[in-house]
Image: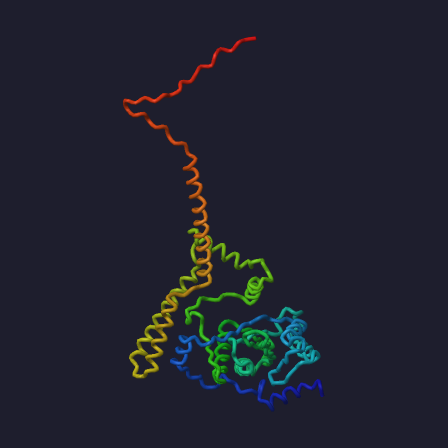
Length: 367
């Protein structure tokens, strides 16, 4: 009975999950309230964060990850069906099941994909967990099994979601940038349905440059900031060198920086057109929103990318070095002026000056 696979499908039939879950693809498209989205953006509603933290290969790798998110049994791990797992034996069994389909590939294939969903400080952790479950059911629940664990040990409540790579239809879960954005939208929508103000918009719509950092680089930078490591990353060293060459006039900014600025200018024009359209409305709420849009644009005259910040720091360092050099040269010039001999004065006409005549040496005597 414990090895009967029909038990799993029986639970899915009763709970309406798995392959028996309703397919959201056939659901009618959700209507988007443009005013509400614009208001949340310009009034700086909290933005949800969804990241892929790793891809686990093989049963041992999956088991180690589940042991980590479960804090070795201290934190409850929930299944797609809502069951709670704290037993190491159950974790090992799930890891074997997920890794078994790829075992013949000798561990080179991904068995599970780990993700993190997080919200800002002060958000209700239970609302975050339920919102992640709703987003996971909507995005992958009808084809992929998953596990989730809520963590509240940091200021930002977050959920670790681990998705089985191979689905029931043999298609593999491999989320890309577009998929992550859809996860963000589903997560934010689920939070708003629970009374939590949240939004999921691209960075350029908020006047922010491209992040462009991996999870590993983020963790390495966190170690440097905390003092645990003093060795700068290769990426930061390369970026600093490129910025220094640009500050010295020996290099140029990357092409994507100018493209990002052009896109922000186009976005600004769209915001300004929206503000003008809201001003023509008869609704006072639209007039207030138009004012918020213009205040939002005033705070962001231009977009700032990561290379821009590096260039600003490099320019500051070059200027400081130039000021130190100038400060060292001025005292040397003053000391040279004090030590320089004064030229002799020319005698005026009609006046003579006693000048000692040099005496010739006398003849030397020979012995």
